[in-house]
Length: 436
Ligand code: LLP
Image 1 (cartoon, rainbow, N blue to C red):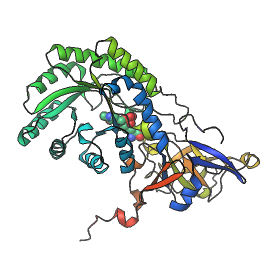
Image 2 (image 1 turned 45 degrees about the vertical axis):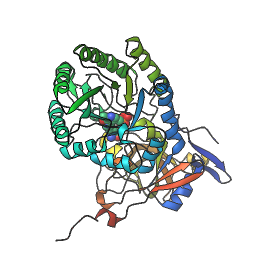
Image 3 (image 1 turned 90 degrees about the horizontal axis):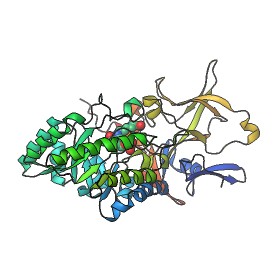
């Protein structure tokens, strides 16, 4: 087996075959999966997900042993039931942002008491559903939401466990669309208002204050923003407790980045050792720690397989038109995100010298439907490619635009592939339409 393609993709590698090389994810030959299930096709490595989780578990080990740490997988990153089941069985709780996500967690066998509910716009219906299910904590994002949650809880004769999301005003140095901890964001309560809001919450009969929460952004590749956010949150913890409101847990959100293209995020275990040391040093060693990682648990565990439909040489640009599109892989169109694109069976070196610079684009009728700019590829129509780092925020953000059914998904364990989601048909996508 040759070296992994990217440090972030430990279970993806080319293997030599009599006719050349073939790309494998764990022990599964990806070209076989593309032939059996068709393309576009998402394929995930179970081991890569468990390894990513293990890094957090190592970092938090001292607290996990005392039952004082909870890893709540943020399922917005990838909400396939099989993946939720995997994380539930590995001991994870879940960070949800809708009633629909709660239903998914329950359908996958997740423990509702280990669910935390984030998001700025929870509806009364969702609050009722979550209270009836007995979730672990509501991460409340505004003063108005506190009052509504209190009303709903009192109506049901229940007490809602709450944590208030504070905005630490720390620059996560990431894409503006996925930076959430700055003053101008819609998320959380301003640092200066936090103590007053906690005092208000503590007086409401339908609420029980249990923790504090912050989340500063996503795809964070430096440790500094985390260290800064922790200090600012601890300042608040101390002020809130001095006001007579004890806090049981501190939730530091998710956000750790992955290696898409030479990115070098801190390792989860090293980062958490550092953060726990700071917590201990400031006298908060007894508090429970919650985290909400999404992307870093699944992003580099997944690839999206696609077939080259046509090559279209042009005067200014050459287009490589593939059968995956922005409805399957929305991140390039939405964030100008970079995903590495590699062939499943690379051509030999003599042919590789004939590599051509391509715009890799999908079939959707929009110029924004691109998957990669300026990619040097040696390809022909009918070749298959893998779009890497496709485990997070791809399938979960996929749509039916252009009446394209969403792709199928396969989970690989060693040499064993399992279909975990069937390809959607066109009929699936208009099943709810009504002809008058
Ligand atoms: N907790 C909260 C409250 C969040 O808002 C998020 C992500 C997470 C946890 C998980 O963050 P992660 O560990 O995945 O960075 N669609 C964008 C990413 C949006 C992230 C939104 N919030 C993308 O494709 O880059």
